[in-house]
Length: 105
Image 1 (cartoon, rainbow, N blue to C red):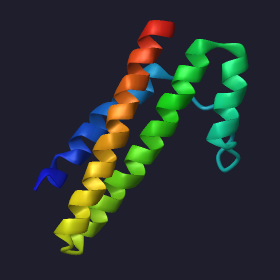
Image 2: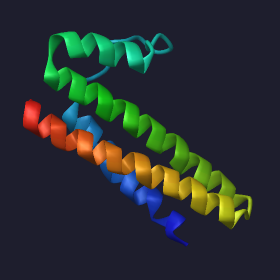
Image 3: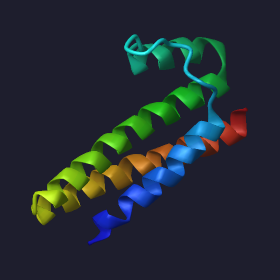
């Protein structure tokens, strides 16, 4: 049943993304590997690093939220709950990264 609330939490954090980071500097379809972004950012700026980590964690959370929704729609509540747990894990990491953004930017 908790999977019904995950999209709401995801939507709230998606709004936080829009407020916390500027528009992407990469054209559609040419986004580089997140690990490369983090590695490059680490050499330059703690704020950029925190934003890159936040973006990566939110991408993972979005994936698991979508998976939970699809599994729930298919009637597989057990796997939907497992996907929800994964989404919540990455949302927790994103929250920590958001705190890092607040501290370093």
